[in-house]
Image (cartoon, rainbow, N blue to C red; front, top):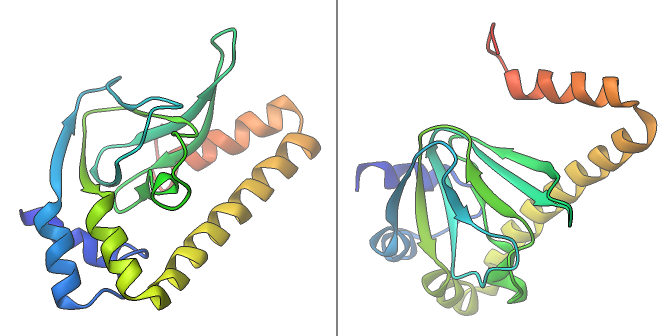
Length: 166
């Protein structure tokens, strides 16, 4: 699969040996999504993680009354869906394609075997989770210190990225 070379740049996988990476790549499949397609739902039993090849994936939470809050926006090279690999719990949020997208889907089992064989690799997991926690801290602070207009403006700027138009 041509796009599996993208996996070599994913922080969770950069320290894998050639043999370990080959095992991950051989288990990886590509998943094509149309705009609005649900990749996974909140509370669903997880079995795999994903890396964005193209497009954008929204990670979001829904309230009881159906309102939605986007927790994260995943773009090319971003990894998501890894929490279940480590805690065995259901999905904490849903993942939905914001546009036509492709993701690489990696089953948990080959990764579990690698981490059990080389526990020192788990430091890359700690770094990933620490980065996510820092992002959550920033989002929490924004929700406390910024009004709705400020939060909306900040989110739109983040979504636009380096693009001239949004």
